[in-house]
Length: 154
Image 1 (tube, one colour):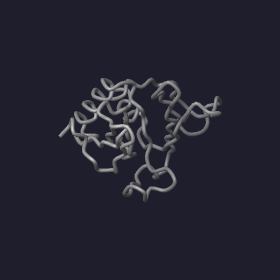
Image 2 (cartoon, helix red, strand yellow; image 1 turned 120 degrees about the vertical axis):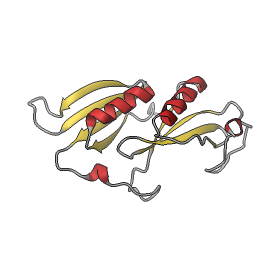
Image 3 (cartoon, helix red, strand yellow; image 1 turned 180 degrees about the vertical axis):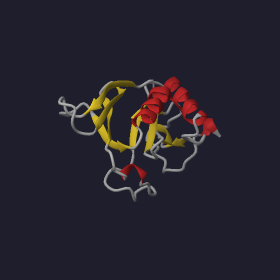
Image 4 (cartoon, helix red, strand yellow; image 1 turned 135 degrees about the horizontal axis):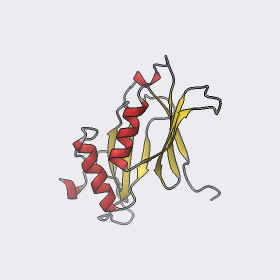
């Protein structure tokens, strides 16, 4: 394989400060840049949020742009439907899940996809995200459809 994974997802927000707080508080993310897109001070506000070893969110706050207000059901969101983050460990998954539930960004449901466990969340702008981790209860060769509850969370 010639790549090492996803580098970034670019998104639009109406409130960069609120989004920074959410990702910092829930995922221990680092804010790498917060300012105008171009060195001369022009362009929209660009925040780069480091959310993983090789992954970041590039968040644009563009005056007058209302795109962040639009949300529709899954698979009706256009070409980018949601993004998934891989938890560093099962313990990290548990901590992220707790933080998401505490903030009202996710319910308690964990999906058992077979090899992976998954929890979906919505960030403050309504962008859907998912956190996955290797399933410690996985049965080799078994893949489950969406909506399959993880037994350890029942």
